[in-house]
Image 1: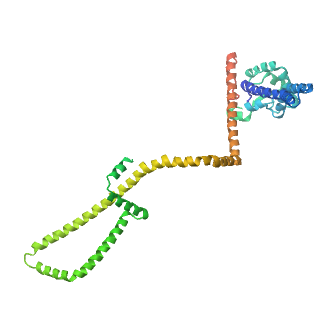
Image 2: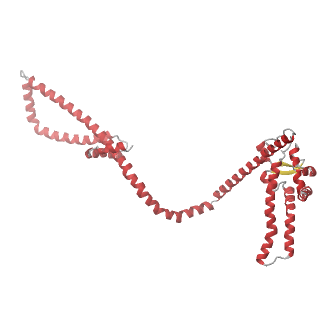
Image 3: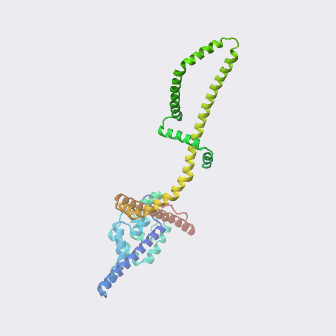
Amino acid sequence: MAGPAHAGLVSRVAALTVDVIVLTLAGLAVTQLPILAWEQVVGTPPGWLTAGSAAVGALLPWAYFTTCWWLTGRTIGNGVIGVEVRTRAGQELSFVRAAARAAVGLLLAPLWLLGLVAVLLRDDRRALHDLVFGTAMYYQTVVQTHHGAL
Amino acid sequence: MTSAPTRFASTTSPARLALGFAVLVAERVRPGAPTRDAVATTVGVVGRSADLAGRAARRVTARPVGLARRSLRWAAGLPGASLVTDPLAQARDRLADAGAAARDRGRATLDSSRAGAAAFVQSTMDEEIMPYVTSTVVPRVIDGALPDIRARVLPVVIEDLTNDPRIRELVVEQSRGVLDEAADQLRSGTATADDRLETAFRRLVGRGAAPTEGG
C-alpha cells in the first residue's frame, strides 16, 4: 500500500482515552476553578460566571478537537500514541472539515464509536466518520520507521 | 601471605635483622646501585685500613723479616728441608680456601638478612600498622571531617552542580530521552496490537488475514 500506514483500532481507542482524560481534567478546571476563586475572594459567584463557566466547559471538547486537528492534525492523545488525522489524500484538515468532524463526533458519540468497527473490516482501516468526512488516521513517521511497512 | 614472613621474621636474629636493614637502607639511599656495591664499598674501606696497618707493620719488621727470609731460603736448600716447607704450603692453601668459604657464607648471610628484614617490615605493616590505621585512625579522621564536609562542602558542591548549565542540560536531555523511549515503546506496542486485533477479528469473522499495515 502506498503512502503512510493507517492506524488501527487499538491506537485510535488509546489516543481517544488519553484525550478523554485530558478533557476531563481541563473541563473540571474550566468549570470549577473560576467559581472557586470567586468564592474565595468575593463570595457567592454571580450567575453569569456560573453560566459562562458551564458554556466554556461544554464547548471545550469541540474547541479542543477542532483546534488540534486543524492546526496540527494531532490531539494530545494522538501525539502520545503517535497517530495523526489527515485527509484521504494525506493533506492537513481544513478548519471547516475539522470543526464538522469534531461536532459530529461529539454529538453522535455512540455512533462514532460504533463506526470504529469499520476499522477492523476495511483494508485501509478507515472508520465510518472517516468515510463521511474524507479523512484517515495515519501512524506518524516515527512509528512508520519502527514498523517499516508503508 | 603474611604467615610466612611472620615465621621468617620471628626466627631471624636481631643482628641479622640489623644487617638486613642496613642492606635495605643502602638500597633505598642508592636505588640504582645493587647491594653488592654498597657492601663492596664497606669492605673496601675496611680492606684499605688493613693495608695501611700492614704497610706500617712491614716497615717496622722489614729487616728482621728479610733476615729471616734469607735464613729460610738458606735452610730450604739444606737436605731434608722439604719436611718443613710442604706442610707450610698446605697450610697456606687451606687458609685461602677458608677465606673463600667465609666470603661465600657472608654473601649468603647478607641475602638472607635482607629477605628477613623485608619480611619483617611487610608483616609489621600488614598485621600491626595497617589494621591500626584502618580501625582507629581513618574512622576518627572521617568522623572528625564528615560534619564539616556535610555542613560546608556538600551545599557548595550541590549549588555549583545545580547552577551549572551543563548539568541542567544533561538532566533535561536524559529526561527527554527517557520520555522519548517510553513514547516509542508505547507507539510500537499499540501498532503491534492494532495488527494482532485486526488479524484476530478477521479470523473470527472469516474475512481472511488482514494486510499488515503497522507492523
